[in-house]
Amino acid sequence: MKLQAAMDVTTTRQALDLAAKIAPWVDILELGTPLIKNEGLAAVSAVKDAHPQATVFADLKTADAGELEADLAFTAGADLVTVLGTAGDSTITGAVRAAGRHGKAVVVDLIGVADKAARARTAIRLGARFVEMHAGLDEQAEASYSLQYLLDAGRASGVPFSVAGGVNARTVTAVRDAGALVAVVGSALYNAPDPARAAQALRTAVA
Image 1: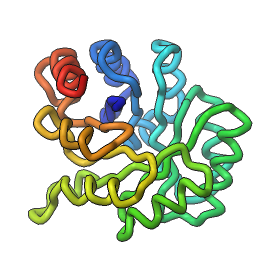
Image 2: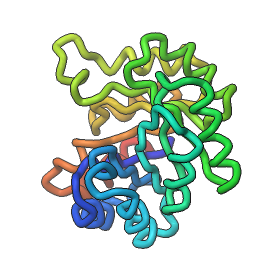
Image 3: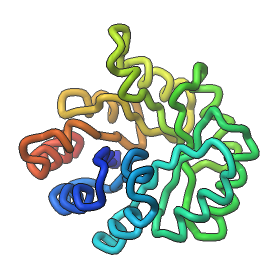
């Protein structure tokens, strides 16, 4: 299983500082949506330039104009981009076309999708590399939230999936055991007193 670091910071400088600490221990460097909204796709280019061997994930959460937005991100240096699962099929296929031209890939983010397993299967048929079983920060703050339902949806989908929604050193092995292709770790890294040590501990846990 691969480890993806969701760098939900708001400046390119913060992203570069965090990436420098954690890059040896993670497989995918994700530039969070707030960062891209605040700094633009120049942040993607900066991280890719600093870590050319890393897989750089631009969390666009595209809802429309899939081909155009994906093309812009791939041109900036992204290796993976997200399209929302709530978007229309044509938005996903447009992004997939752009990915094909660049030799890159699309991930469909299932945040806000009620039947995640069913939409996941459709997304893969449309050409997504994998899907993200995702609960956002607002949903995670709800009293009823449980990571387990993301794991169950991933298993039920029968397709390649990642899990994002409060994954940490305590839960990352459950994500692995559910069959996830990727575990997405956010606050457990960027809020850690020592992000490098936290990333190393996560890598050791799933080795």
